[in-house]
Length: 393
Image (cartoon, rainbow, N blue to C red; front, side, top):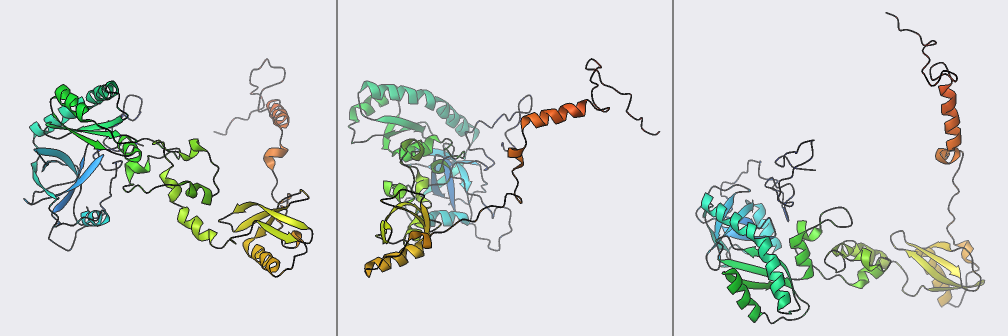
């Protein structure tokens, strides 16, 4: 689905705004926040003077103070202060929602780290920014080749020019510490700009690059997820998921962040399960736990000595039988506690697909064609219009 500014090609296909998911309408921005107050008349007159600014199509965001009280709007390019020189970014959010974003990131308005907005970007500033962005892909390929030639155990994931074109930030991933002092000298000599090396994790790299996950949606790390919590194999084990690295790993090569989303729900449900409920002593033998359905609060058991169908038991019944085992007693059989599913009434729910065969359908269609309204059996395949009635005039 394309936004209103994307346009269409010949034939009706979406042309795309060529912004890789970060169009100016705000419908598909990376880490975009919907400003629900933008079209509402607010009761207070004092505009919050801190603005959220995004750089390089939402790959990086920062907060800047509008000390000059410039009349800004979302999607506008502005010039902001940098450590050395200036940078050019896009206004991604302003107003009261910026307070909520700063509170989420534990930032205060009074901090000295919040720099100022210099001015609204001019045509010369925009041309300089576009020229720098157009060179980034070629320079990144060259930077990767240089790092391989230096035989360094690192991977250059992305690069970003500062708005004034005087500084180049190289984002890289590495398992261990890398001595890149010689590499920085080669980069500076090759690209004729100041070089800043910044190490990021595999999840941050996937967030900057972006992509589509196995769920069919854009990656969480490139759309809304800001803090990356560690995902351990316990999250897989508690949810009874099969250990399949291809399905459980994201595009970053690590365990998927979404494995943590329902982990708290599973942990709360596991509190109702008995801690030592692997075996139940009965008069018919020892029953072994085979499967658990955590959210449904069900446990499946099978006798150890005599193989047979698994019996479905509720957690409350299992606790009751384990309590009897602690007192030295044994329940007579698991069948007395097993949950029996009701048989479906086939007369009420008839499987029409299974009862109808293709041969019957072909025979019925052949019979309809041989009638007066269809094709005649001896007419050489031509339609028979003799039996058709003409409509009344």
